[in-house]
Length: 132
View 1 (cartoon, helix red, strand yellow):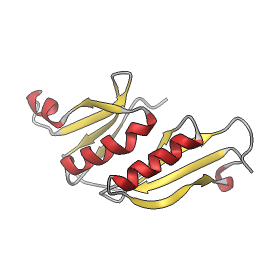
View 2: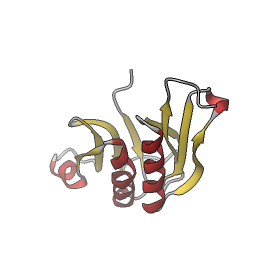
View 3: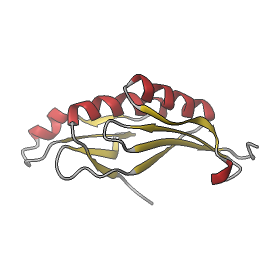
View 4: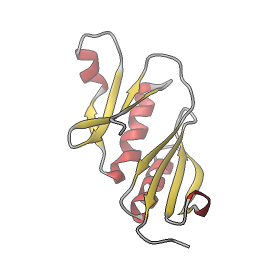
């Protein structure tokens, strides 16, 4: 089981603001702010988001930026739709509107957003019964 993922970004403040808005519909909140990390005195820049006061996504202003696909679990189709809307409002680019994805399985409902660095960020809901 994965505990958390670290993502290098070009513009930490821009990505911070984007992910703060994008992940809110999924119940994620900011765990560590950019200022918190600066005050740790360890010479890195970053911030984190998660749930239950536990980091699940770490954004770093350090290192090489490489594009990835990152998927977050949603609890309903509505949450996927809200995630997608939040991503567009936060400046993301649609990379696949919310909807069934039978090519990934009969119970798969996903929505895709490109973040400020071009990463493919997804929310996915896996229903108990087939969607199609």
